[in-house]
Length: 305
Image (cartoon, rainbow, N blue to C red):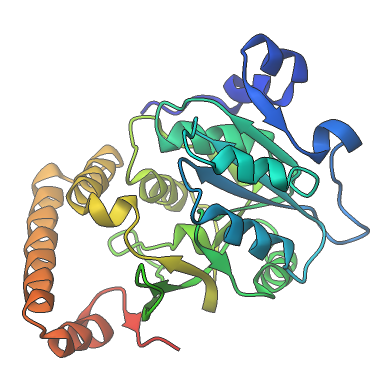
């Protein structure tokens, strides 16, 4: 594995080191000091990894700001955008706790930077263009209070790129064979990152799957909320690079002890199923697809709300 120590990213917490590396940064942390817990309400860190998202980032920033829970620190890690993304970030600089802009090795590297910057006891991630239910973080914190050592996770409502509702993706944490955690609907105690490690730099697509599988095998507790936490647009990197995502997931299973023959047989089945689904959708046979997704799949997709 190529899991760097969290300490490797400590320089991103130092203004001096950021200046020395020529990294652009800003946010209220540098002008007003870091946010802290309020009484018995833990600080929650929301991390957004972004690159060239001028059309979608602002709506996500507004959604985080509109959450009913407090205190929340929003941390934005930009990968060196060349559009108006940085301009949008700077427009909200007085309401974003911390942002930096620098090139990344891959998404794992960007997420590791964000985790290192987080001061919260509980950490969630949200992508540009996606959004939380209004009371989602408040409900997650309540679950966290009852399960302080667990990764709290829930369901994800998927939308088409033109914002038509598609389906709700449920989750499974009861088995390694069918492990499925909706990454953008999951919140992790920072102590878990300190114990299990951060994201493996050898994974750029299925990095979240490898990380949750690692946690499952190391005995990390999970607590599932059977409700929509996050809304997510289809058409992202994982959708466009689904075959690479499948292949990396297979590598993760082999890395963590599954026999290669079994893993690659599973990969072949997954590829065939996906090609059949795409073919059915291309011919307008969406009803058959929905029957499979809601009745037969190992991880069910519920009808949209």
